[in-house]
Image 1 (cartoon, rainbow, N blue to C red):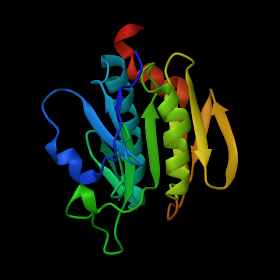
Image 2: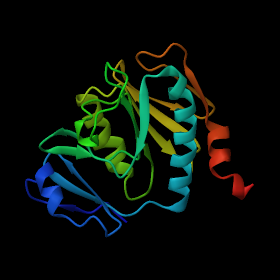
Image 3: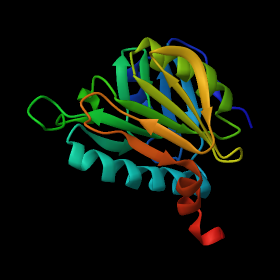
Image 4: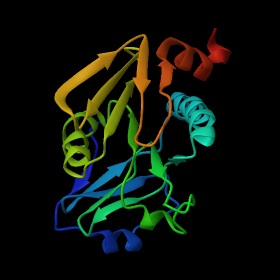
Length: 191
């Protein structure tokens, strides 16, 4: 099923008029409304496993916090995205902004691939995160058991199937993501 869109010049303010209890996620990407159906059970399990891994890493580093959808990242009046998971940096005083809508930049954005979002995740969102100076963008492909990584430093898309190393700004040591273990932990009930 394709990700449905509605044509007109949508703004972040228009999102306030849409239902918040219908199970869909609504995003505005360059004036286009993106409507995404509720995620699958497998999708949620991967997000939970990654969230636990990132939280265990970020807490002692003291550089950011993990947030998962639904949570708007508002880049401009025509760009409000809801990454499946993102890392918001702490403010200089070591705290997070009071409201999610005040998160002005990200350390990491992550999407878990699904058939309905693959093109948007791989093409449109990748471009937007690059334009908005998000240093790292990961796409987790559960079926291929890989993580696609895009960075600001390199136009290439790197695909990892064993270990991915992440060293965000301000961190003293890198996080080593064992992709096989991450997915095994996410699906521990399916062994």
